[in-house]
Length: 523
Image (cartoon, rainbow, N blue to C red; front, top):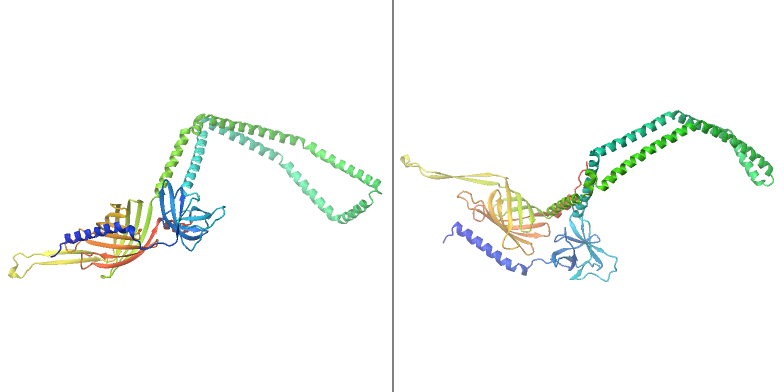
């Protein structure tokens, strides 16, 4: 008995769903891989930024990874799997760090001041936690600072914009202008006297220098005489007194000269003091004007005063900042996965390449965008039927022409929407599959190490070809690598083939780490 196309598709779909149901009931009873080491649980207030499989470091050395993150009774329990070869002292506390401003988050175990009583053991539960400043707190603080600066500039604008503020500012500028003009006139009027004083000082310095050079020998003798004088002080008192009197006379002469100079410059000094007093009085008036303005602001007088003292305005500013913070928090919840993969068809020898971007706004749905390329390209089949009515001499006969056109190395597009259905790890997809409309499903099991894919598309092809069905099983190797194996286009015998492949996948934490390491020009 021959099966039709509908029967084949029905049998295949039933078999796949039976297999999915069986694996769903058995998924928790079997695992291909189990990490070694011992489990330590930390109870912390928040696990913001921490993801499963994140690195755990102690003194800069990676000693394990995050096994699981759970919420129990309002507390976050973070399970850490520490490799057996590392012995960690029990006086450590947990801290969330990052490798850069946009770098990958990891767990850092830091020792405290308390003495260690031993080492961490399997199953131990600890509560030591050291908080750090994350990007949300920095954004909030920057928002507060920006709000304060905006309030100050707005207040200054309101003060200057009022008629009273403009008049006060004009008066202040007029006072400053008068003061500078007075100082300029005073300097110009005394410029000649200052120049004369400088020349006199220079002449005196030159004279003293010449005297020192010409009387160097005398100065040396004077020093020797002073030594003799100190030795014979008691016996030479009358001589010393006489010399002191002579020195006093010379000092009196010098003092008289200084008095003469001061008498001639007394009027100039008086004018200078009067100018300083005038400037001081102007500055006092300016300070009084500033005090008057600040008093009005404190009392709430005027537009600026009402703005500064209005609590409702402050609440509006806080609400705006809170909204910006919530927007940044929602953006941070988006998960991005970038994938590069390749497939080799064993039977046909064809090679395919894929670039995919997966966007996860939450745990219940995701969007898949990408490009696909094929070594042999896409094919277009055209079937033309020729029919002859009453052919002459029975020469003509009916026949059919089939034309196949191929475009090598062509690009096709991927744009799909996926939503969680029936089970936690089962997603149904709908959209473009290699530029053709189709539907699909993917199911992850064994701690997301295995994923089974089923795609069906190209339903509008010509009658020569059946719809394109493809199934694939993926195994994840570590955090970023994977291998694929499956069967492609198994309803069409001429193009069906078993295939193998693999690729690499980057998460948003990987992309942040890579972007944080790339140097960007500052100018």
